[in-house]
Length: 146
Image 1 (cartoon, helix red, strand yellow):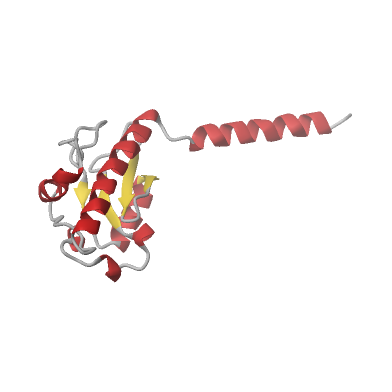
Image 2 (tube, helix red, strand yellow):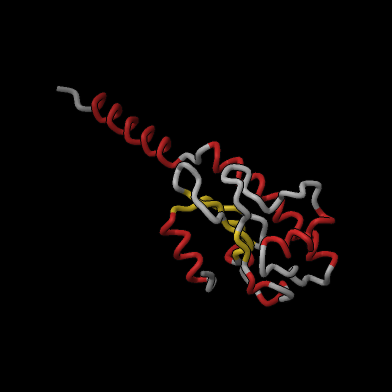
């Protein structure tokens, strides 16, 4: 018996199911794109204010600070869950230079999960990651967020 065709079919099946499982849902993709717009506004704010992060004790305060840099007044509200993003209050009026690894500095994250039980998390370098609840808990613990 020739095992090669069976091995190829089995390997292909595993790869297809792995890729299907790892795909981000359309809801999470929509939220990710929206969050990137908010992060771009934060980066523009940083440029205009001597690399100091805007006040971010609440989504409302952050929204007021970055409003001149965005066309969307709901930029800090998830378009999927319709809940305001949570902010990192530790960044308020802190210089960007305090954080050597901006890709690890949380700026925003979803308050509630999407249908796929995942959360979007936005970082100071402008990147957004879609994570599980456990990954979010780890990120929040590392960032000292509640």
